[in-house]
Length: 338
Ligand SMILES: *Cc1c(COP(=O)(O)O)cnc(C)c1O
Image (cartoon, rainbow, N blue to C red; front, top):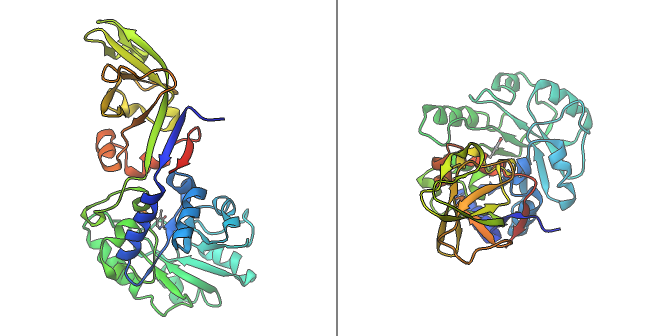
């Protein structure tokens, strides 16, 4: 079955973004965060393409996300570590241990692991003090990680976290150290250590001038369900928030807030076909959106339009973060790589 809405995914742009971030990472290896279903694009399709391009280190949030990719044969680190409910090991998967309890749970397995150390974000991770007290002794640590709280802005916390993390060099059995996410890669070579972990920039997210050259990957497309004539003075959609200023043609699309095309696009979003720009009219519904189509006289039932979704511009327009714009993309889309 072909869904009436789809994500057009640019595989060349994804790979080009990874290669750019890999170059920016200098001598460090460049991994990929594919949690939250590859930021909404489909973790499997993303992982296959990046693995083929040479990416060797993948990061998911939970064991379930990791198990869904384990058959691809790439190394997957589970950022949330290992809970009592999780399996103590699975081929190609290793936990990023975050707490003393997780360390105690994992140590008897003797299997390799990663460890997160908190250097100032106060979200996840063991402390430098715990490491000093021997918490990690005897673990087989592949990578020691920390995570930057403010990498996408100028903040004194960046340098403090960098110094705190660098001070842990050689203090654990870790073969590698990893600090930088997408924005961290743009902070400079000091932040790269041995392995970087971009997510958002792989998928077209641009967080500043350091990300120049990053390309958009996803374009939502939707099929016209009905085309109708609306008379001057008629209203369109829930709560009648749009009143036609003149006789006009309207098309109804198979997409709505249940797909992640949220109500903030009401009266603001744009669709396109060819050179024609087609404004969203009135409220976005759960499963439907109305657009004005006078600029596209040939557009009819079953035809496809593309929705404007350039991440930086759409973030400004909607007030949603670039992360939310991607991860909100719902399960009803076909995800099609080109
Ligand atoms: C999500 C995540 C990343 C990737 O972050 P981006 O800002 O998307 O590049 C890297 N490291 C950790 C620990 C994360 O949780």
